[in-house]
Length: 145
Image 1: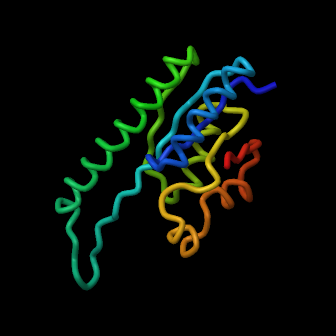
Image 2 (image 1 turned 30 degrees about the vertical axis):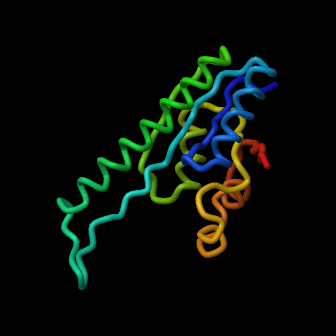
C-alpha cells in the first residue's frame, strides 16, 4: 500500500513519539522513511529596527545544527528498527508548505505527522501546521496523537 513515508520532525516530544510510531508503521507495511525538518530562520529586516543579514548568520547556523541533531536521531531510530531512512531539511516560506514540498520532491506516498508540535499556544495563534497540511496536501496524511 504505502512504500515511502515522510515524517516531519521538530524536536518536540510529540513529534518524537510520532517519529517512532511512523517508523514502526513503515516497518509494518514494508516502506522506507524520509525524516524531514523545516528550518525556521528569522529573515533580515530592513525597516525600522534594521537587522542586517550578517547578524542572523549565527542564528541560522544554530538552527542548522539543531536540525542535524533531530535528523541524526531520526536516522538512528530508523536504523535500529531496520527501516531505510533518508534525511531532508529545507528552509521553506512556511512549515506546512515545506512538509508538502518535501513529500512531493521525495516521491512520498503518505505523510505521517504529529497532531501538533512545538508550542500549543503558538498553534492557536499561528494556526496548526497539521491542519494546514491536511487542508492543502494531495498526498494522504496520517495524524498521530
